[in-house]
Length: 244
Image (cartoon, rainbow, N blue to C red):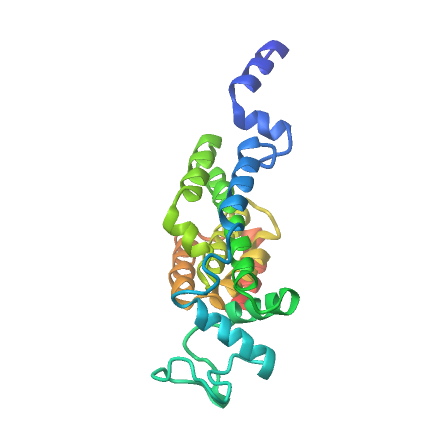
């Protein structure tokens, strides 16, 4: 192929052009998505100044972590959802605890405010949108599929409202996307892909059990159907065993 034909193919194929730049980070659409997501998710987090729906449950349990070291259902005066069963020493037993500890950490740095409660989850929501772009490029090998997928995530009002809440929604979405991205990387032969899959599965488990179970089962079924390349079998076995 001549130099001129190579140049023309490079100009016609935006995916090739991005590989010549900085990989998927070279697409200006991606940075546009990041800026727009930041503007939509990180502004006006105080809203009315009050937490709403189940956000207050997360925030109060986070405050109890700062006092007792774990999400205790009662502070000695008030008890959260008295109808729910609790674990040993009055520990919260209805949800995984990662969301509570993340909120507590935000309270340590920024104080126990509405903005501090919502900030880490809104930040995770931005990464969810960027990860959706990355996943679409990995699955469809098309820059326009990635751009459209990212744009659909960005313009979904119910999704943005959930991402802005002090709740597990953004965490579970990010961990699910991270697990899928790591799995695709592992299938492509990246040695660290299996390790990252284990990490993301652990994060997903401690974010939301309901999202973890179907994700783990789907991945196991795909592994059973396609098998694991022989050079990766030992690393995959160790990673999946560690996750379990």
